[in-house]
Structure formats: structure tokens, C-alpha cells
Image 1 (spheres, helix red, strand yellow):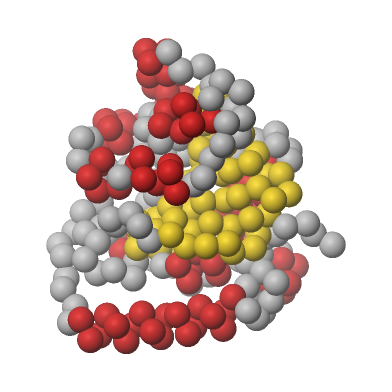
Image 2 (spheres, one colour):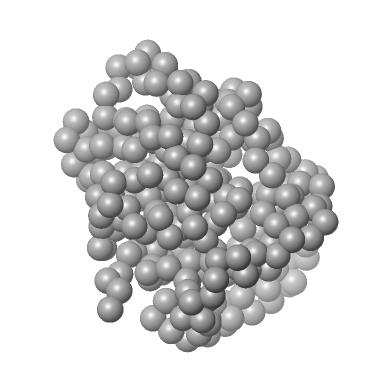
Length: 268
């Protein structure tokens, strides 16, 4: 993933009755939102035709953000390769349960996977044995230093089906129409150009290929992560609507994160 330092804040507890009301309201809003168009948003066609320069607003940055606003959300700051050690912290197994995450993705042997913001390969090397020698993982990073770390770790572990790709802040440089699954673990909220990145991610997906957004749940105040490093299900769906993506399911089996899955559809 595009790396960052640990984003932990204090826990705020909310009365159970308020949580239940919030969930009910959220579900009602989501049902209306998703059914307003084939892509889930009555404004998606309008957004797709707007000039890219008008999709973003600029404001004074908050403590953890860059001041760039996309669809009402401030984009968070990004940390560099010097924080790579944090990606391998032992407590990550307990906090994120990566093996359960990968099981939930329903991958099969021979799949082509793109891990956007692959980082040290923490997720990619767990996907590797699932897709086998006939499968491929494109490990995408925007820093050559991180790709060097990835290559070293994969050599140490004898993993040969992960291929590093040096992308840019607007393009992951995936081969066109080649990918079965794109996964982004705790990374999408850091994209400085989310519209452009998703446009090019979709270009790399096969028709019927899937995108999995794995983000800390903004809806849960008990998830001890800074606000800008969390995303709600509704916000993820909103930001997916300008693209040829159809929502498939949201999986909430992980301790702190949700897995929000979309499928690429044919564009008429």
C-alpha cells in the first residue's frame, strides 16, 4: 500500500440506541442511492462529463489532510517508503486479519491480481499461493524505493509471481483489460487524484473484473483510526459511480475494515 505512519486516535463510545438509528438511516439512504441508476448515482452521467479540473476543490488543509476535496471528502496525507516497517507490524494480524480478507475475495488459481499500493508485499505475498504459479500479481507503487524493498522481500521468500510496476499519481500502468481483481488495502483514501486513478484502474480491468476497496469503517466510532484515514460505505459507492463499476457486495467480517466490492460492466 502507499505507506503511512500509524493513524491511531482515542476511542469515542456512542450509546447503542444512537448506533442502531444511524445504521437504519444509513441502510435506507444506501438503498435509495444504489437504485437511482445502473451505477448507483443519479448524478453519475453528469459527473462523467464534467471537466476533471472541476471535480476537485481546494481549501485550507486540516491536520491530517492535503486540503484537496473530492466529492465532499478531504484527501488524506500520504507517507513515504521510510514508514515501510509499520506495514509489517505484528499486531496487524489481529487488527486486520489478512488471511480472512483474502479468503473473502474468492480468488482462484490463475487469477491476475493488481495490488495497488503494494508496499512491502504484506497482502500480495499472502495472495501469491492462492493464485499459484499460473497467476500473476501486479504490485503497483509510486515510489521506486518501495518497489526495491518489495523485490528484496520477494527474493528472500522465493516468490516469483509478483511483478512490481512503477505507477504514477494518476495511472497504475496496468496492462489494458488484463486484471481479474484490483485490491486496495487502506490506500484509496490517500490518492491525490482519485478520479484519474479509478479511470485508469478500470481500463486495466477485464469486463467482469472486480475492484475491492478495503477501508477502515468510518461508521464505527470504535475503530481507533483518524477520521481522514477511514471511509464510509456510502462515500466509497459515491466515488465509484462516475466509473463503469457496479456494486456487488460489502463484507463486514474484518475487525476494523469493510471490503466493498464492485464489478466492471460493459459501457454502451
